[in-house]
Image 1 (cartoon, rainbow, N blue to C red):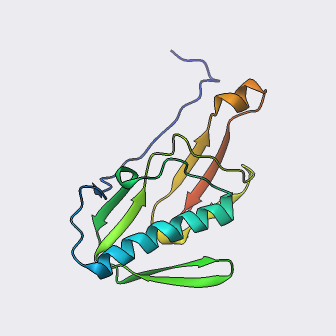
Image 2: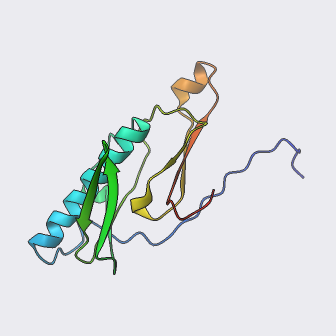
Amino acid sequence: MFPASQCYLVLAYEQGGKSLEDYEVRNMRQAYSIMMQVMVALAVAEERLFYEHRDLHSGNVLISECADQFREEVIASQKVRISMWGACVKIIDFTLSRLKKAASQKVRISMWGACVKIIDFTLSRLKKGWTACWHVICDSRLEV
């Protein structure tokens, strides 16, 4: 039916939680945790991928309940430990985002517990004759 050269894209989805604008934050500790998780996620992605979200707002931050007491990540060689206070953050909607890291490099961001392949089919890059570039972001416990 399709030629052998046919390319496919497989996406795995999970229930990400409620958007920050719809989530009822329980207390100041949880609010602080949510903001720290967003800031750390962006800082790690910026440091390791030269990543820019470019459309971050409360609708693009999902919150789900979690049992983890804390999570750790390393930024600029410094370990950052965040108390979760029952909330786990996921950032979504990468439509306007940019990243610059070489596609051949695998990047592991252990804190966020999911394996994501970011594919950049930016029209401006494709018009210049570039091929689509992709990046793998994975939990360190997962194998790609």
